[in-house]
Image 1 (cartoon, rainbow, N blue to C red):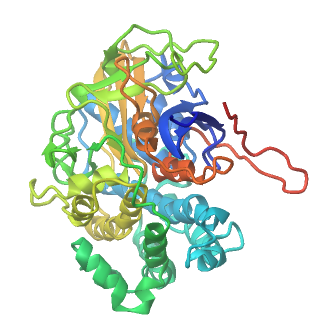
Image 2: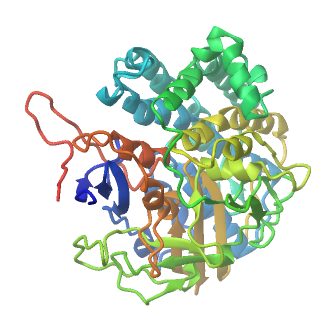
Length: 533
């Protein structure tokens, strides 16, 4: 006789950004069904309708308080493709650098402020690594927590040199950028990067030089690196890996096993006359789809993107439509109905490949594809781990995120070397009607903007963010979203404290909008509510 099904409604799941709620069914201590509820409606698509075409440059960076550069990048490239601009190589480098340093700040901030906190949960008190985890990662007081969160602010000082401020700068515009850095600015940027490296990356995160870590190409080489020196095993990366395996985070969180990335960082000499169709062949970080079941790669084309609102709080035409064909029409009442509508997020899919996971794991898997142009980045470590460790997991998903650290750092260095300070930074475009598309990879994954300009105004503006891919509800045919699917099979040790659900969701670093939730241990004010059915 099967055990009774226990239903948990967990709210909020996110830290700082707290608008993700999750419902899970648990049977015999394992999640058997899941629903993700995006609980905040932003409505940028509604706000931008009938506005000046360049309004997106000001409005969309405010869609997020931590990755506004990614939205600004998309907004600028969308208008570049719609207007047929010419973008100087300096401007492409400046746009790329702004996004890179914003991503660099996000890595320690997420790792210490949002991820490693869970390793101090009392459920793991029997782990031999628990005492050290509490010492390093306890919120606000942990030695690594304090150092990591503090250092995270340094990279975006470089962004401020370019854009005047961070966040919410609008220095990227159609035709280039509104800055002209001096030699002093570039020198300061170098010193900021070096400080980030010498005070966190090497002594605390890696326990070795970046050059030594960059030699690692396979799972076996990584495991050998761990055993090579105590400094490696006891680094924050080493402790993350060893404790993650000890508490079983390599055993669940698999998901659909299909991944997508738009690719990012257009090459400064390959995309000066941007078009929608030409983008994939011009990006340094490759775009594509990876199917883990067949171990195959295929191209990623924006024309195959579909949005389905069957289970989302919108009153729109049934079926899946391309964003250019969508008119956002939110409903005024939004009760949660697991069998009907239960989220503000649409269900995003690929017309042929179905539901796809976005994020750092997707980027790293596609980076393992050894085909492409000679200027494009390749890196096979995470793909090798994926193949040898049984596919995706909560642990591998987070490792992939942090593995990008050195890769992004090196690209920031290259950008600084490539600037030609006396060359052009902006070429004034000719405004006209048309459709445009701008894409990039925010730190959380695939991000893109579609714009349709008619009669000199925005007729339609659509945004699909990484979390839209990952946190979306079921499609009309019942296919779960990536996080919903990844939760299936998750073991729950204590249903009164389902930390494992948090692990899976936070491995995607889901982000809907910035909010704050706090808990008062003395008063007992509510942090989360669990309903058992």
